[in-house]
Image 1 (tube, rainbow, N blue to C red):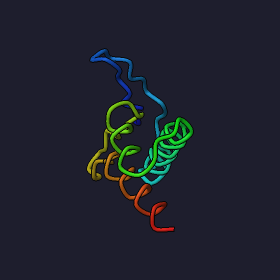
Image 2: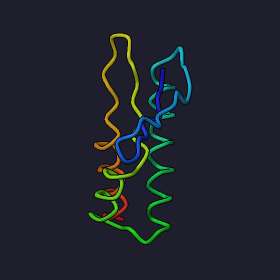
Image 3: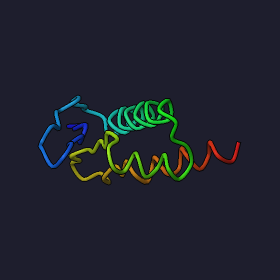
Length: 88
């Protein structure tokens, strides 16, 4: 099960995004959600470290309820995406 993990102002606004039989497909969807959230924040003028801080504060942070597989870390993935973009 993949949850978008988005909660604003302490509320519980999260919703199940999808359910996957294959873990790799769930990770791929999580990565897509993080990239979409980063793109939305970047379009608001955030970049670099400010983009990461904005993502941590209000970006969609998906997670997977795995069955024996490792957890997906949306913040760590966002850091990787932003650092790679900064290096280009």
